Image 1 (cartoon, rainbow, N blue to C red):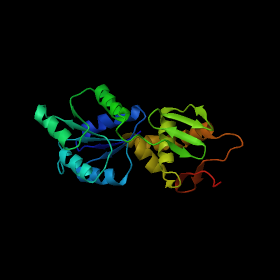
Image 2 (image 1 turned 90 degrees about the vertical axis):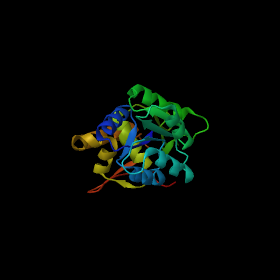
Image 3 (image 1 turned 45 degrees about the vertical axis):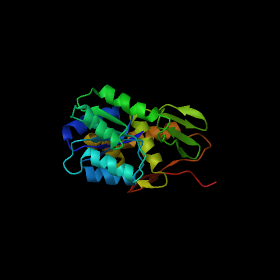
Length: 225
């Protein structure tokens, strides 16, 4: 699952993003409403979580503008406002859920997962490179119809590479996507994790899918048939 978190409260954003990453969610954080709006219209996400209280465009405005532009991604608004009319205003603006910022992380996670289960919402697309598939909803990875067991970090690395199949993804970009607050630490061990991913997804007799681009990063690509 790839999620966009739009929040300029560094403390709240950091806690929520770290918690979601522990659940194998790839999280992009936008520190303003305008940046969040741009990311939401140029990148594919499964869910958007936006703070109502933003310093430039507030969450309601971001939500309303995305709906006017036809962006169908499920949106959860987090608000410190407790009044019923405020929650109704969020729903009228196009949000799918409004939740108090004081809610426990477990409830936020449950609401996000519930949004993905709704049949009338766009489902996360199963990622495919050659005969390798990754389902962001179930977090199941398979090659040639055989299930693969990956660690949490290995899964997140693989999802980033598969979402950018055919592109060169730098080591820094991988670390930033997975764990921005611990980016330096992850960079120091990234080669080990990449080796683990390769060892688990490569099948004897099948083409290699992860290619090292020396001095630049990695590219995930299946050979043309």
